[in-house]
Image (tube, rainbow, N blue to C red; front, side, top):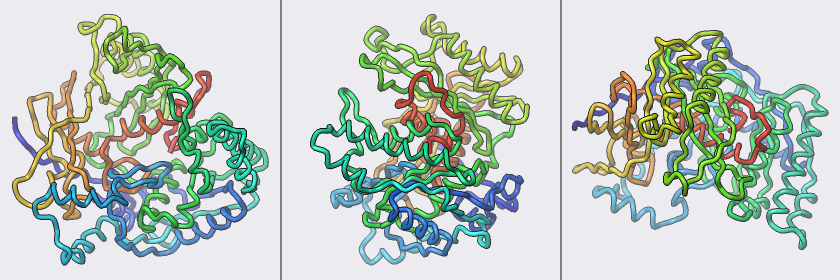
Length: 526
């Protein structure tokens, strides 16, 4: 057993500028797409909402074109927050004094009141001033709104549904979703010019139906709305925006941080690339596999599989497999597994599509990430997913391709420092043996000289089930992939995109009908 601190992965931006911080990289080099000729200098948006909210959003977008000074009011990292549609919708402990006591308990040298000014300077590194999303700044891009594409929803229609005495909360949720669906269809039918993104404003009073009970399940309004809009086609990504974000009545995040996150996410939705990895082999394809329950299944036996493939630029595709039955009581194991043929066909389809999207370039190595154990024929001959995965990859790429099968789980191992006020550093690797270790993807960041969180970091248990790569190299890649979540502009995420994206996609596809073929681009689910 040994400990090692892995170096922070570097990112590439425009003008071949290299650094480890997305905000700094954009501020100096600009978007990576300005270098590889895929840059979009205009992000065209349409808007659906009440007349008043449409005007508020137009004004809000105008503010994003200007310089915004960081106030330091919220320096909590997104890994301590709930983010939906590129927005922070809750912060753990943001209104709870008890969390301050927890911090004091965790760190013996909790900073005194007089240290706040110095700490703010450090936080300005974490949350720098926003440079303005316009063509003259390093963004070299701007938002454009063709008002002829905007669709108004009368607020009184929404208010009437919510005020109904005869409808249940679930029925109210469905009625509002139907109303938005009707307006989105109207939007598609009457487009003046096709926008890159459709911005839909969610009024504050819809919080009443944010999550409603439906038997054994809770229906999330925003996720179901997104799923419903996906089924209407149009090939236009949707961005849901809370009215509270426009009014700043409930300020969970500093405006500069909101601006960084929002503009990065919208730029990515134009099929452009904010930044790329430098420390990753161009000939390696990263695949993530995850499983999700099917809400329409009353017996809770059906599962759906999601497989994703990514390259070093974060360009990826989503492939949703057919639903299958997994009986936990019968199998005595909660986590689903795939039979040989299902795994083979799923992976083969993903890899073949990946090759087409990369202009016929075949990867020489494939790394598969999974949050559950791998089963081979020795463990269970009826669910020989390992053999199926390898057969699918080799069928698409040939026998010479290198394959690494890696399990990534939460670990209960905590590491404590004997001195100082901060926890273990991000990138710390506790190597148990040649194929197993614990990697801390969150923690103290030397670049910021602080830990952007309030909870003690928990490591990720990393196990190489099969493959020739070293544990160090596998963990370096995982650490790098935590910097590729374009749903925001954060320094890192706690999970690699191979698993984080599948988690977000799963939240949406559980509301889709089984016979619907969902889009393969991740930004449709953001």
